[in-house]
Length: 379
Image (cartoon, rainbow, N blue to C red; front, side, top):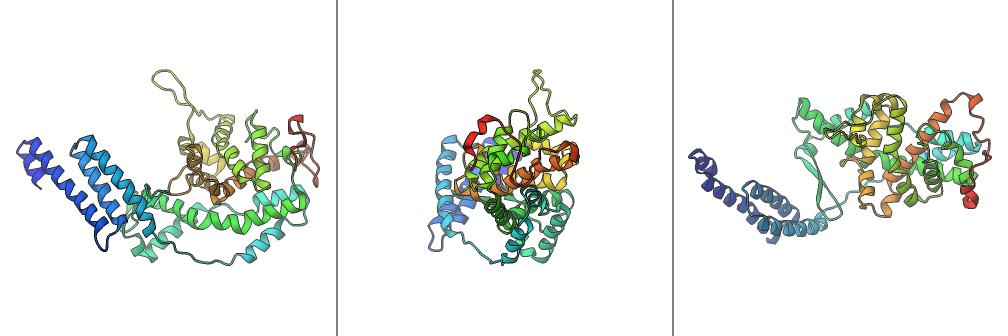
């Protein structure tokens, strides 16, 4: 209030001083929350973040901001010990058995087809309705905005509240919640109940080698020329439970493959800059193109966005690119689901080719010859 009065009087210096004093009260509150008998580092971090932002707007010297950011990092790290995990058990034994039976006793190509296409993608409209229904059924869970934190307790994304929001504001709040819901409840169950058991059944029955899998990447419209070996080794590594290699080989390739497919369909994937350069569109803008949705479909676009680049989802592409992904994460739901989606994307064009043109698809465990570079790396 004082700052507004001072500014109304035309005294900007006194207005800034009033804003700084007000901001410092948030810092004091944070310190009290951190040190009190019933203190909470989580609450302290919240007040300190707000205080730092207020001090920035009050044009406080940079040295003070840097000092408080060090303290914020300490509060956030300590807040991890205050967080609790909640677990619920789900019996997926019947689904696991069903996944194995789905591919069991088939020749290799048929098993591969049933594996890649044997589980539905997310129905985006159905998920949207489910998120809205959850907000209506459990309004207290959506009363306040939420946040997601990284392994150091730093906030990575703020989830807006769904409580009493309408129009465009509601739409902006619903989509992040959809990605978060998929990350928490859908991709993990799909991995455990379908992808892993079906993959292991195929591995035990057919022991797919590089030679067996080579038909997937040869002359494939999803695989750009010169990238066949990268895709082949990534797919092969996943089948043999080496998702550390599969993730690092395949995840960075998806963006370029999407550009390759769009270009092949006559879509301009470049930007013309004022200086005359023409950089290609990166993954986020590619998903904004209407042609991307038409070619790949809403469900696949939603899954790829959520798994690869959406922070409320898994943000896995960005985490891989910047070195944040741990070895354990390479065996988690994001990596395994992306590997399965790449397999699906490679197989669908083959199934769409008339049978007269697809004579190199394998029968049983046989496949056509491949380049010498694949030599006895088969397992």
